[in-house]
Amino acid sequence: MNRCTLNPAWIGKTFDDFLFRPQEGIATSRSKISLTSSLVAGVNLELPIISSNMDSVTNGSMAETMALEGGLGVIHRGQSIQKQADIVKQVKRSHSAIIDNPLCLPLCATIGEARTFCKKHNINGILVETEPGSNILAGVLTRRDMPWQDAFDNSSVKDFMTPFLKLKTAPYDIGIDDADRLMFEGRIERLPLINDKRNIQGLITRKDLRFLRERPYASKDSKGRLLAAAAIGCTGDYLERADELLSSGVDCFFLDIAHGHSKVLQQGVEQIKKYFPDTPLISGNVATGEAAQFMAQLGVDGVKVGVGPGRGCRTRLETAAGVPQLQAIREVWCAVGGQITIIADGGIQVDKDIFLALACGADSVMLGSALSGTDEAPGKVIVDPATHTKKKIYRGMTSPEAVLQSLYETSGNESEQEILDTPAEGQEIQVPYKGSVTDILHRIRGHLRSSVSYAGSHTLEHAREKITPDPLKFLVPLSLASQKESFDR
Ligand code: XMP
Image (tube, rainbow, N blue to C red):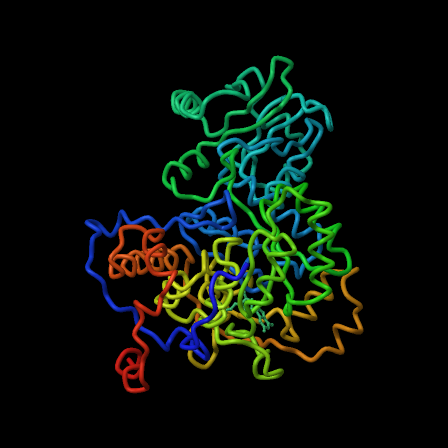
């Protein structure tokens, strides 16, 4: 079904070609403007921002923070299946109201092993079971209980843990409010959930409860765990990868290749849909209405739009392939808008571009460079010896550096020689170090709310209902002089 044909006024147009004509404001308080939008049917994001599946943008820390702030992180696939699956697990465990199957060490473990275990899994406390695999609670050991001197490395955890008889525990079905009260009264940080045979069934931590109360808008699944998405390819070991990710609790697959409108993607989507029919699948990338219809016919839940607009991309320079990003978003909306969700991917340079993407057809927006350089993005901060300014690396996933890293980390993907023979369509750059991504997301949230207010709406949903059927009624095309007046600062 084609919703509409593309108005020729969109051809060749992207974000800086338009301003939005301010509408009479109706919002009484900007801070109350809802930005909820759908990721795929049945899954909403309070902040429709997704961090790119790039190895310089999204791994565990970014995915965790994105979900806590109401967005979503897509964990990149330039790493081994095991590493990617472990990161999904880590995100699903973090800040969850109830941690199912919490990590355990046996009574016979040593303090040295416990220390390594805490570091590896980034946790502050361990449930101790009577014997390896028994799943019967023997005690709790926290970092605070562990002596810091190496001399104790061979001592038993048994000598330092709080034993079962001194622990407060609760049944698995305890309500969150009751758990909170119990933990406050007992001044305890961890509440193991067990059955009448002392079998460990879950764990609640006060830190997680506090976090969830402070962030009612966090992106969560039906069990109160943070949402986590992960990227997969469509050749090599992608089915095995998808299977591991699913076992780790992933909520959504992003099947993502440079040229999504292709036979190879079709075969990949068909297999994923066959083996994992219940997991939402977003696929891409595409830049045309025909490609979006192709995706919709394959039965995907969402389509990712963007060929070459990204800051780390060289595709348009090297191959001449691409469609200006706002035109691409509009073309895709005309083809499949309302049928499957649309994720605008790449090319966002300033916050106003996000609102334009959403108003013109996207349901959510994926950001790479805008979120790079932050504490939560993978990679170390480097100090430029000449200027003493702090930087981080941001790189396209087909940059030579990212390709080599990925070949080193993974095996069983596309033929190594074929990858090495394909010239790069991405580049590595240094970006300024920006501190925490939380501040960037707060800024985006504020600007997006202001855009909605200027659009004469009280929610993003209302603004989109009004504008998206015919955005040109609301947009002012810019001359070179007006672009200069608007953007030269
Ligand atoms: P921004 O503009 O937000 O774009 O930095 C992020 C998006 O860029 C895409 N991407 C690439 N595109 N070659 C490309 O042509 C690459 O090597 C590459 N790496 C990432 C990707 O869609 C990402 O979300």
